[in-house]
Length: 230
Image 1: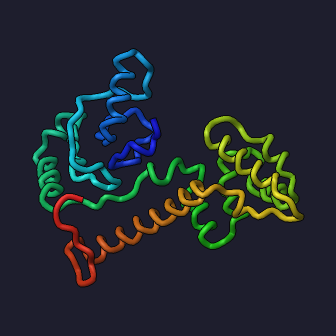
Image 2: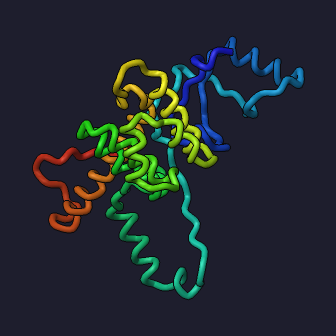
Image 3: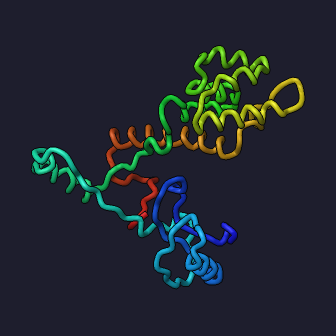
């Protein structure tokens, strides 16, 4: 079954064990259903099908509701101030800052890497990625990359997904012909977008924090106001 026939509203949990609605043409669904009945292994479990008029599209998240359950010291959770804060959130909303899902762990410097990429300093961006992976330090890594000694950097990397991605990056750089390395070509499009989006998200956090602290949350002239869910 071609993966392109599956459509869904959100992509953030694509690496997780999750449950969400998907749409698929009837013929393909029947093929999957009968394959499941025959005992063939599928990478997902089929729920109860419902007929719909149109496929889902990215961002169609009107039904993206969830419940929060507070656990902890009953003296805090049961305090009247706790209820007052929740009532304020219910009535006034809250600022949905970008968090660790967008930035990753601090040692990989994702926003800083994105800043270097946007400035066009791609070599320094690669060095910034290596800070969290290369035990010999930033200056050593920069000198080796500038000298074209990529294999020595390659061999210092540890294990894990991030180290694997960096090895792929170094391998792409090593395959280039010519006297100098075009590091922009070595970074995959997905990596580039991930790091730049991380940098933009950090800027957004700072701008919104300044806006709220200086001007509050009431709409001002020029604001884009969205009514209702979404």
